[in-house]
Length: 204
Length: 204
View 1 (cartoon, each protein chain N blue to C red):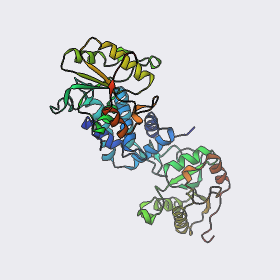
View 2 (spheres, chains in turn blue, green; view 1 turned 60 degrees about the vertical axis):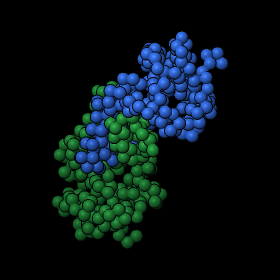
View 3 (tube, helix red, strand yellow; view 1 turned 180 degrees about the vertical axis):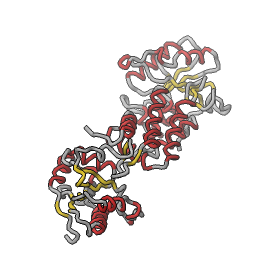
View 4 (cartoon, each protein chain N blue to C red; view 1 turned 135 degrees about the vertical axis):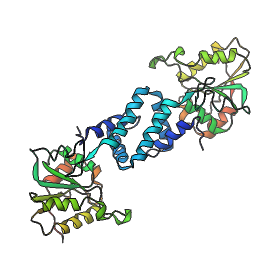
């Protein structure tokens, strides 16, 4: 058990070690690094995190994070508003944008259905997606979910919910090997898989 | 080049990616993790860093970090005030304390002499060490510096400064292989090397 020369240091190490992938040794290294920086730099560091957490908004339409009520993508008139790509998190929006192969809008679910983790359909932005489709103007829904059991379950659940609407449902091509996490795929493969998206079939 | 859906997110990612060992991908992961936490938790996180940076003191005697003007170690009457262990940073104080083999006081230099990095003797807490020795009561100075060129140079420089005082100068045993960084050594080896400390010889 390490004893810290200062309670303030120990407290900062405790907080830093809560970050994913940061153990107590790394946390101490980060704390000592921050101690060596100028007060102004450390202040900017902490304020940037507080500002992000306290001021960031979620787009009323697609639930992506945004600095305004409606995000840049949803308010861009050059984007194809008749196509909506359904993703798990903000991170996948950024990944798909990076491929430069997609020009429609998004819908961020905030996760996937996962009974193991206690995530139910009602915890996700599924109802708001159904409402968007019900409001009209959407011709195609593209699933860009991880090809895992949870991703497949979520796509199936949403497809069932949308079956009575006149909307084409597609899913990105499985260039990505089954069982892999979407977030670790490379940009070219992911771009290819968007171009190759195929009709979603409830009974495949 | 990644485009961020929010300037606030991008700013936080920029700040997080300044941390040592944190690239832009990890910084994004950390930012999204913080976004998922409660406001209160993120506030505690940021405040712990600000508090540490703004409120932490440096011990007037040994220059270790401290919550008071004189640190816990320097103000502990059970410690042997006649022995002073000279270390590079706070981290080495913690490492030596962890061995439970040392019961004297410390002196934190704040670095080692390194012409390559532009660190001169006057940038370090060497003068304050000489003053401590000049004030009397110190019988032994133990060098616990990394066995690198910079560590050796610093020990040599300090030993020369102290040669006219009636003080024994020792250095921790080189159980640690030459060229290795002190901070990566294990507790047992480091503890052994403190017990085996040897007389410091200017001409060895």
